[in-house]
Figure 1: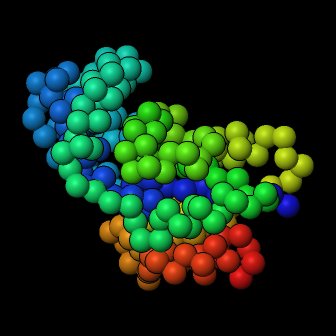
Figure 2: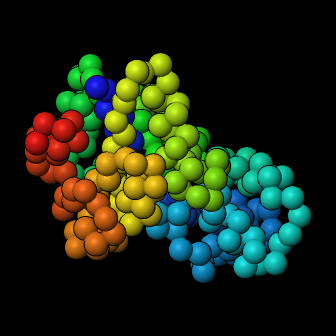
Length: 225
Ligand SMILES: [Mg+2]
């Protein structure tokens, strides 16, 4: 059986040093003339579509959401490469060694299940040199609901496989619940704002403090452990 390993991006693979939030704020200011437009929006584990929709609602901005999103993305993608260069972020412990090992295994497919807008995910991964490991996935413009993003990732990456098992890896209870909603194995990693205990309580099948011991993480993710 093939395993699809679907990774969250922020605080799971990497920490962008706040570059994403900074670029989103600049884009929002460009379009609506409002500073700190996302100040009252909780980002953690949320999809970018949800984050944008919430900010628009909070500021009483109506009109066609998809039109707003298209214009927003154009500005966001203009700012993000610059903020990535300005902010000093990092890959999380165990990366890229974990990805190196997994990508050499014929029965493993690596993908993304991220709340990031697709091109933002691409820019962040490329900035930290790990974009080549992933062959697609589900992304933040597709839904405000993370479970749907996981479903899209499974459909795309599982296509053509007689049977596949999906594993979702992320740092928040939203990652865990989106895995469970799709019958996937949920692996939590406490490199974001949530503790090992919180991730266990949210229903994770396995939880790691981080992936610095990447060999044992490989064993769990591939189902060998
Ligand atoms: Mg995350």
